[in-house]
Length: 198
Length: 211
Image 1: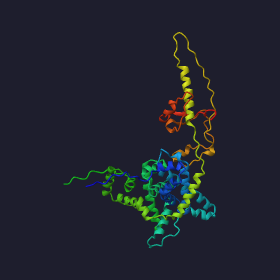
Image 2: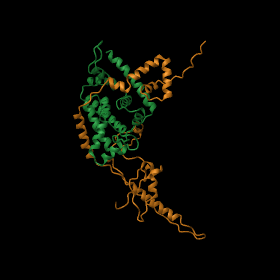
Image 3: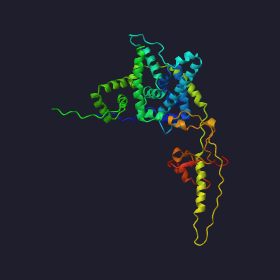
Image 4: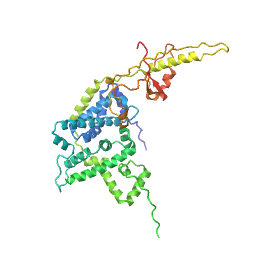
């Protein structure tokens, strides 16, 4: 029986190698890094902002800052956690700017009401939640979580970061990550139950 | 007569989140399983945690993903932005190391000359004129990209209130030595070579004249 010859397998280049190539001016390295992390970054930004245009802006800002401040992360974290940290910061900043802008453009009564997140279309009683309704309900519920809980939840669920990675990104302990996730989910469940009974 | 089950130690309820996410170690996961087997209220809490765990939640509430064209436009704008960014200025640490090494070597040579018994050795008096602090970067070179919450109260805006003449900016372990050049005799400083492994504070030195 002839055994198969062993070939050295070459996987895709690691982030470090791509960053070295990027630093030496290789455009294709940037393309590959973007392709690798664009969806994760977008999901985090979208979940924090709730719309595509703002989420893409946050992704763009996050990548630009991450790639132009590489000295800030090298040796301390992975590119993924560094990027998602900056993207989530950018998304939260954009969200704050947007809320300020919206409040300034509203009359006082509307501004007061704008603090209360409500789904754009509340489901009719007795009707099964459609997918779109559910997403809007969850967006509203997520938005009403305290920022620290919301960010922790989004980084873990949509950024697919482990507890350790979330802890590194936010500068908190793993126990705090665990606690924030537990209470965030309990609150989400309570908020959804309340919204569904509207 | 059957022997009663031993009393279980209660688990922190936050563990249910970690259990739902598969983040608990084997022993702790077993504790959770034993606990929920005999506590229906914990089972209900776990059900909520599992409903909002990563894969289930992402499947339940899928995010609309933009077309590739939209991502391509973002990528091109990123590429355009990063090529116009000025590369970060690096402080020439090697020069600082060599300056320190030269100064230290000079002091050691002058103070450790072998003394002849009965004959007072020459006493070197080295007058050190403090250099003004060297400007590493101006405030418009610095952009705070992000910071840990715990560091926020320490953020200083404006001039540092402690006007030290020779502030320690970093310890040796914070520095990666990228290059070094020999002195006039062709020697490299031992200090420069060892700096990256030391945790002593480093004092910022002005760069050598003429560079």
